[in-house]
Length: 131
Ligand SMILES: [Zn+2]
Ligand SMILES: [Zn+2]
Image 1 (spheres, rainbow, N blue to C red):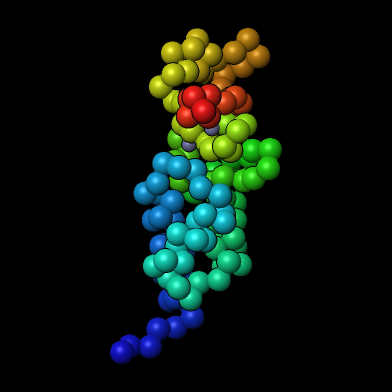
Image 2 (tube, helix red, strand yellow; image 1 turned 45 degrees about the vertical axis):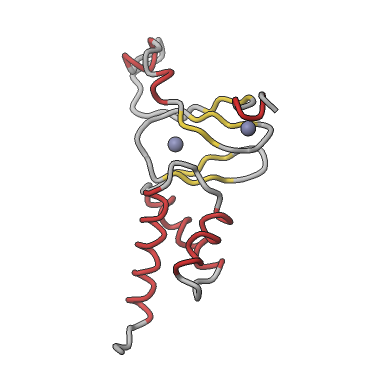
């Protein structure tokens, strides 16, 4: 077996974490990312996962969505709004629902032109409302 360097391993871990996040639409928390990634990379530490997520966030390669009691991560960095459920804490994309709104469609407000935006809607998701 070929011995891999520390640097190579860390690069592999990084791209695995990024790949995992790219592949899900669930906006997982760092804790969930760690739990899922650990299934494939059993030796990875929680600290590494948290650190890598922070690096990606600071580079603008992923975005963090702050909810009341957690931080969720999204590898989709295109402009889109999120719906945060106050019951289950899940974060959902609501892009198509609000892209027809005048401000978002024209990227323009009375104050000036919009380059990017972050919008959070808060409420109860369908699943929680049907409980
Ligand atoms: Zn919910
Ligand atoms: Zn999203």
